[in-house]
Image 1 (cartoon, helix red, strand yellow):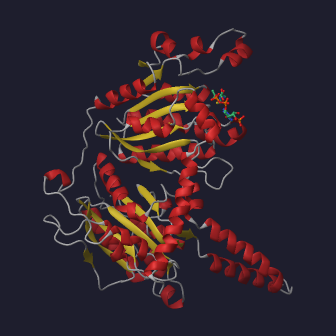
Image 2 (cartoon, helix red, strand yellow):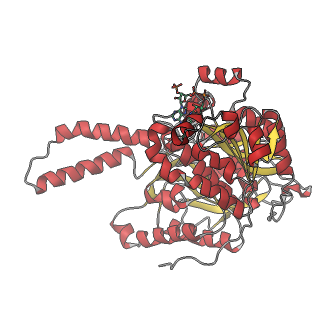
Image 3 (cartoon, protein in one colour):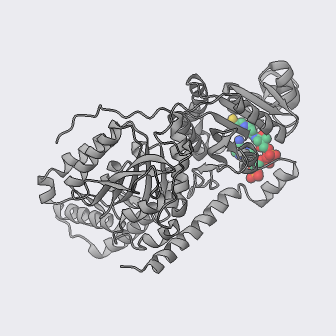
Length: 532
Ligand code: COA
């Protein structure tokens, strides 16, 4: 067993690396472009967001590492996240004009799709802070056709009674003009906003007409002549003030309130165990198991008047490699499924299936805590029905209708990733710890399987297998799979909503649990056909 000091040191190293990557995202297009932007008297996207949200409130930034490992800037030239405006939880998107003029590359589009999916699933209004050079022209083939969905999503959101607000700070041309065009409310900043289908050069080419930016798409023109701007803002701060007033007038009411809301005066207790110790708990080597009850004790509410125990474990004596039970977080009830020993057997799959049904019966959200190497393999387990039992668990996860939250703490391999509600199963939110690793299987196992397959293939053709020559291939494959299993890479691909410090897990999940209450929480009694 590695010592807690070793574990802490390994986690702190990973957190330092995470801070460095987050700093790259915050740095946008780099010092030169940020300075130029500020010299023009303009604010950066995070500065605009800070002024937009309620003072002292938290902003839950999403997908900050989007595009990591690609040719594009980390963060994908847009900031997205959930912020509280006039007491209303809103999805906020903000182009970063310091990165290639705020142009949208393939990762920007994926990141905005994810933001609109979150707004739709959780029932949030959206505020877009617009300043973008439109499509990244060199990669237009990857964005032009799928990117049309961005504008469709804005009007579908409006039709679903989720208001959309565009605050236009700068360029919003060509396809980008449809962001304010499709939004319910538009605010344009005087002498800054530029909204037209084609700029002066394009108009000259197309029709021969001579024109200028202001008469084609200036804020004054849109406010006084075309009617596309509903409000004319004096400057950026005025636009943000108007944006806040628009949200204040949405008369927003959450449809759901939890059984014992934390606002009822009784409050909730902070965790009984110190969240700081989360850094000591996760073994530096993931092959070592750890007890998820220790994690639960550090992220869930402590014992209080409304909450007789921190964690009421369900079926503690059965299928002990998966821990299931009930807890509260920020006063809100949750059901938890957490891997204990890594491998999932038939008993664990059956227990998970029953527990997910119970949560649906009482309309209680579920939290999945991953540290699994997948379902057990081998003759005994195949004959015992591991496939049909794993399928039952996947059926329950797929058809469950209560909101799901997922945190990948450690390993998340194979179909275990699916059964535990990985990204492909659309949890409302999914966050990763820096200690996580996720792939179809471990790098060494994958390289080993490839070698066995290659050897059998050579032998079937009557050839001699070159074991020595394969060594090099095996090393390359192993290193590549290792790199592709790591959190920055997976976050870069938008396979999570962000990599978080384990000590922030409680706060992040608390925000998510409040956000999901913007839609009614209703479990289902309709699952697919189970094969018991
Ligand atoms: N695609 C790819 N790169 C773009 C881009 C786009 N749509 N828009 C801007 N860039 C790049 C520029 O080439 C420049 O790169 P460089 O610094 O490496 O040379 C960088 O982004 C900054 O652009 P710059 O023009 O210096 O910034 P600006 O703040 O003065 O102006 C815009 C920003 C968006 C107004 C201006 O770049 C522009 O008009 N872009 C084209 C807009 C357009 O017609 N888009 C239609 C696409 S549907």
